[in-house]
Image (cartoon, rainbow, N blue to C red; front, side):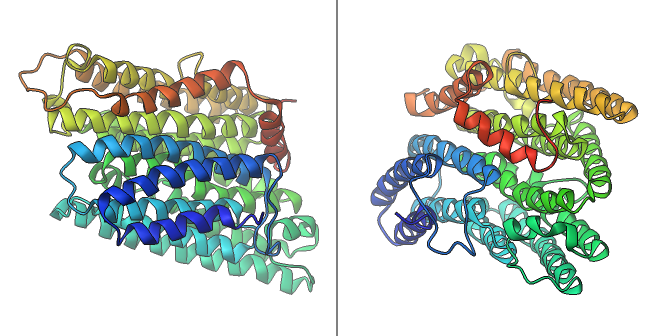
Length: 475
């Protein structure tokens, strides 16, 4: 079976769902999610091969992202069915169709090996996800959608320039090789370093905009706040990873070219700036969905920091990438329950979650513990490995700043979580906690916990193969 079918199926079902009745669209949503998960497992065990190997390939980092995308989408689609029954979304067929098209474009990103196909796929994620942000059709959602499209398009334009500069580095060196990431990594040592450095900087800023790295992050809090919770879960748990893939693959070329001393410090600086920006806003945040959005900016900073550190830090960054997707998606789905129950995004208008919505409280508080880096959740393991990696490489000041920012963010995060969980409120509940609104979050958190104690050897080897290319590992 051809590899390309993994993103073609959700593309066609998504296009069909846009014009079909809502009930049919919801069936397609669940069915496509299940088929996509099966196909992703088949990719994992090597049963699918690309029909266009010059454009698409299965790489370790792409496979990891594909597995995370597929599992998250399937669980989010189950939650979405229950969510749509209680929400006031009018164009439900547009919402379900856009979700499927979004899945198609994100899958295409994970399987892209050609540098220009990767750019096209990441640009397509913007177009597919924009209708999800505008779902509520309010003035605020229109502004958030416009900001998202405008800022990300500027970033993508810079990434295009960076991609061109990378190919120019091959032309200057007179190399005759395909412009795929796999081929360029093999000949990176002969590429022109000046043009390659310039290309990396533009790609980092361009894709970093989509990834949510500060100071290019300004679209992210508005988009996550205004989008319905299933869309927010996809944007935070999956889309940010897709943008990171473009940076990661380019960083592999930099390492192969012997330019890790150039790319590493830049990633470290952007990572710390992102964490500081998140800390600044989380401390005085008044909306819980925006708080979760800034937490995503923090975690993208952590991942960029670990990638720049390299070695053990790179392995820790990949661990954080996987567990952030699982836990943050759970938190955004749980925030959807809170919004449906209390009808407000303001922290001061929500309270006594323990007494009012106990099932949601368990998922919400568990997600808080996980995303804050409490043991035994995987974020704790990833952050610990990054800190050890930073000390090993002599980045003592950076490691100290990293730890300090984590403490500040935890203080701000914990303060707001305690208010939501235990403060008294006179607000009346609007919903009952049905199984479909809570168990997807439980599965996500349970998966994160299981991976901390037991990881399939094939998954472990996939992570090792991904980070080996940038000098990462457990040694």
